[in-house]
Image (cartoon, rainbow, N blue to C red; front, side):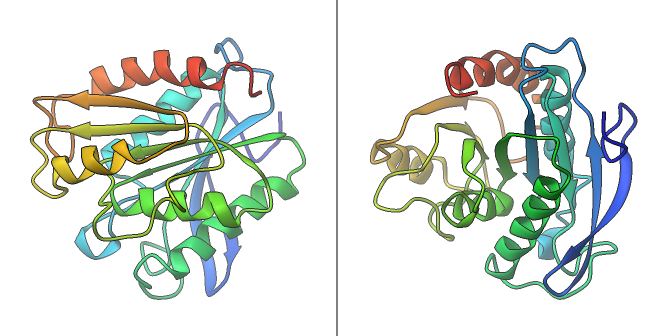
Length: 224
């Protein structure tokens, strides 16, 4: 196991495009169903100007999902958030931040397969990075994606399977816009739809975690 990834979350600083990026790493559990496959996931947080940080509960839930699956993971603060240098750049520079984190992970030399995930604003950053990463992305998880406000797919396709998570009571992202967008995506896509969930999945994160623990291994089967 690398010193950068341990069973106890580890605080690190990564060189970013406009300053250091505050981050935390977590090793996957050795008994997880995806352990031993060289997998690592990078998770992106919601909108920086609306209180979004890497400590958001949806973000930390995703980290626990990856941990329990046996997947190493990284969460980090975008530029201008917490101890990360720089200023908000409306999902443009934030993609560069994510790619810097991916480059750091790749430089550790212990992983062979990359997964990306993001919640709300962070889901657009993760989606855009799937096309720009020089390390092929094996899977993308999008939670409550504001598809009407930020870029996502290119001509209805992603370079990897997608897990799309949306609550019907979301008062930040219009659910119907997400479902209509989903209909034109040609890539393999699994929808997890929650009739009673709002944007932050209050009271529903335990169920969401359980569903992801079932869904992600099935989507990755044969890819890693």
